[in-house]
Length: 313
Image 1 (cartoon, rainbow, N blue to C red):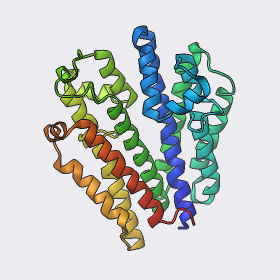
Image 2: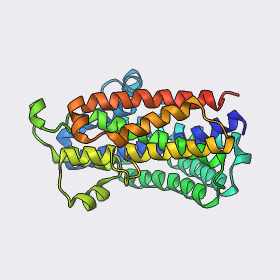
Image 3: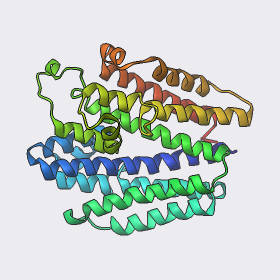
Image 4: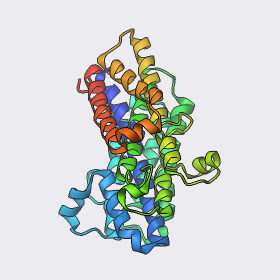
């Protein structure tokens, strides 16, 4: 496969996953603003920080404001990482790699773009926001469904899946890092009280509320939540699950091309980290430090994949 095609598939699915993740964070922030207005401003600020867009927002709009932040994240032309911009970028990449996609996948991406272009042509009214966020999540799911249901399990499929899990792991890690002070073993360490609303935000922003409640009988426990989102191999959004899948898909590429690259060794090292760690060791080391190390090493892996498979060629 041409490196440009591999890169197009990788980034197409990264952009789609990023758009969906942003929609989930907006939904979590919206619930906070509706149920606990006193915490709304700090929550919207935290969401901006999680997406890495605080400076971009401040340069355009100044002080944080819930309605402005929502519009900024959904459709602001001045935000290159808005949901609409991500969907447009995914469609551009889909067009570049059109011959590598089945008709079902292309149509799902194109329809996603058309539907959201119409929905986000104007600022979204407060009453319509939950429905719009649901449509964004659904349209992203339709593309994944088309991928699973119609694509041959070859290198094209593997690059798409690597992009999805790479972006998903990054999102989970950044949410955890933003909320790490809540997930300390003892909240006494930061002189704060446990806040159930914040627990709910973490789980909702990662779409894991029902899964966590089912497996933990609804008990709100810092160590259990951190373990669930970092080490639980059953959870599709945990770091351990995502990197197991990245390792598997890279392994399939190594078999298909009969060649291992430096990226394979880097992925093996990252995957091993989740097999040998336990939460006590992570908390002893420092949750923030652990996540910072992970984000640094994950970014290095992404760059190495681009180099090894020649995305720029």
